[in-house]
Amino acid sequence: MNRKKSQGRFVFACLAPAALLILLFIFVPTVKVFKMSLYRMGGITNKKEFVGFENFTKLFQDKAFLEAMQNTILIIVLVMICTIVLAVLFAALLSRGNFKGKNFFRVIFYIPNILSIVVVAGIFGAIYNPSTGLLNTFLEAIHLDGLVHQWMGEPKIVIYSVIFALVWQAIGYYMVMYMASMAAIPEDLYEAAALDGSSEIHTFFTVTLPLIWNNIRTTLTFYIISTINLSFLFVQIMTDGGPNGKTEVALNYMYKQAYGAGVYGYGMAIGVVVFIFSFVLAAVVNKITDREVLEF
Amino acid sequence: MKETHKFTKILSKAIIYIALFVLAISIIVPVGWVFMASVKRNAEFIGADINPWALPADPRWENFKQAFVDARMGEFFLNSVMVTALALFLLLVLALPASYVLARFDFKCKKILNLACMAGLFINVNYIVVPIFLMLTDANKAFQVDFFLNNRFLLALIYAATSLPFTIYLLSGYFKTLPKGFEEAAYIDGCGYWKTMVKIMVPMAKPSIITVILFNFLSFWNEYIIAYTLMDGHDTLAMGLKNLMAVEKTATNYGIMYAGLVIVMLPTLILYIAVQKRLTEGMTLGGLKG
Image (tube, rainbow over all chains, first blue to last red; front, side, top):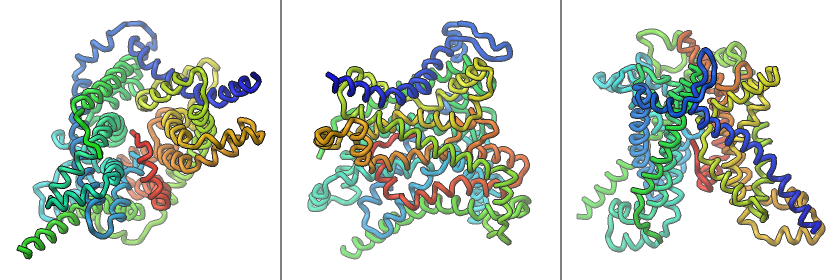
């Protein structure tokens, strides 16, 4: 009896501080996001007034918000496709290829992932600078002047500049992840494939890819969630949505409305929509990629 | 027949190397260029006929001094060291007991707590940073003080709190894999619960604790949106750099800005080179980010 009591006390003492902090700094603010989205609050008067779903109906008529959502979806789709193709390709090269310096490349490719997004933004500021940027001066040096652009200034191009930076930042992380699941594929499957006369490329599509499919599927959810978040951080530093809303993304619009303009209720309604959107999208992607998994 | 086979083999190898080198160069060159630019003079950045690829005419280490002193990056550096160290300490002190108990004891609300922890994994700070700011503003008003915002201790506490779900998830996963016999033996020897945890179980979790420290060091050091929202004056380094970049874009003092970039990324690069194997291996234990 006494032992049970002291165990109970021990369990409580171990859990209470962490549980309290999670409650206070994660769950309470989350509930507040949902609650505030139903109020008109902030602005000059700073009055708080319950308005039901008014913020949401306003939101779906707000052209700037709809453009931000479109941009967000475009960024998610393109970052996901480009990163998967490149990360799987490089992972396959580094885990199956037979050449020197594999470790060197693995170490280098992971570097962007350890840099602060502020640093990544600074680096791309140097790359995209219109007159003295690394990209434009390089293109001029190899006489491809026709490709020189205002990478952060031309409305049609700027979103792809952002996407490129996000892909650059993400490849190494996912590559290491795919390499780990490729390392788990038993060697005798490759030996059997080689005995059957299968070429390396054919083996990649018939052995490697089906066997890491489950891992790729899991990362799809990561892409959705992390691209929504990273595109916000990156855009907030690099362009703040400009020029003229062409790189505005959903969470940056939320942050601008809530923290910048002080229209908290409206800002939080954006947060709610993006939050639900990310879950629905993840669930849908999960559902449509569901197929029989090959196991080894 | 054999000749063509050999030829395609060489060709495919060449293509592989080209692909690898293109990606490697796209990473090494810009990062290396920032280091080079950090010792350039302002005149080497501005003007129509400037060649950004030229080596610095004469390394100007003054840039770093100016960044540290005039742009206050030295002060921000200390702030970042303090906040990161304190946040890591708080995180471990809070997460270790909680993960241990969640992994190895049976009690009433265990299921709910585990579920809450999993749910916490899906809530990103970007969504809740503004409500946190409002909570702290309200606290200031309620107590009529100027304490809750721009407070380095609270910033560290918030960093620790928002990292708790993932850290507990990772650590309790590791604690579950340890054999049960150790605790029973310790109890028979007369060890209490606390002593068993601190002296026996926590040291056994060392590999996963190191993983936790590495990842959270990087995320606390690199973090800027919470700091940017809550702090004003006691800036952290990443946030200071963001402000510096915004200022330098208009004032065009590039050398100092690139020196600031180097100051922010150098500690993470050094850490990475020292422990890169551990880091990329640890990542696959439970990869999640963003």
